[in-house]
Amino acid sequence: MTTSTHEYSRIQDDEDSGKSTVQEKRLSRKRWLRQNLGFIVSIVVVSLWTITSIVEIKDNEMNQMATGKHPPLTTHRVNTYMITDDSSQSVWLRYGWWSKYSTDDHLNITAVEEVDQAWDGIVAGHGVVAIDHKWAADQGLPLSMNLPDDHSKGVYILDAYHQIHCLTIIRKTLYQLQRREPVTWPAAHTIHCFDALRQYIMCTGGDTLLYTKGRNTTGDGQYRRCKNWGTLRDWATTHTACYRDSEKNIPLDDHFGYCDNGDDGLSWAPGE
Image (cartoon, rainbow, N blue to C red):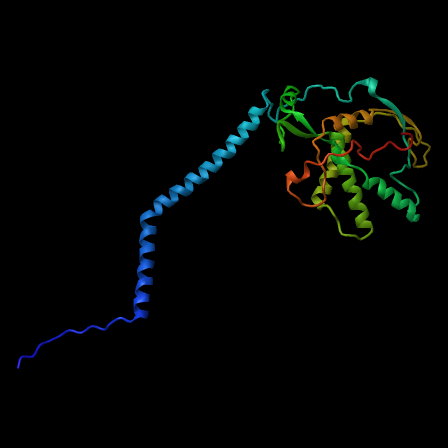
């Protein structure tokens, strides 16, 4: 009787078959990654280069939008242009120690609220204007950001309105601290505003000689020659960028598209 020898192997069940398939897939992925790693890295590098190129192209487009040549910030000198510099536009106004924007009776709640309302009614954003890039370049102005809905124009801020903006921030912060309320503006912004006002005062250098009686009311009621604020306000209205300020942290583009009625909420008091 012949004895035959047979080799037997264990039949894989479905579970073993599944495990084998998963392992094969994992090995297949690893092999694919090793084989294509260089290609993947190349794709990433090319993508980053493309994005960078697009940004540079956009910057160049904005630079080319101004057909004149804008000087670098480190050397530019702004040419003289007439907005309110015409001496015929100046007016005589009386300086008031107290006005609708201040009160010496801090215990009078009604008076304090009226002063707060006067300050809250100021629209410093009225001074954000849109200027043709070519005109700005001809005046020697540095290149500014595009107006979101019209890239032929740049967004600029009239200096005096920027200082008004800073002044409202300083006042608001001061009173919030005095009243032990949460502070709206970051400390760094307020500190910047102190120095911005210092630089503005030293730059404009008002030289009116104010009388004094030694009673802490220097110059009260005295006339001084001033630029016509109404002329500046009207010029800003004509060239408005339709910008609104906001105490909330909103995207930059969301500030635009809101035109005021030509009123910045400011008046010379008393007398205007």
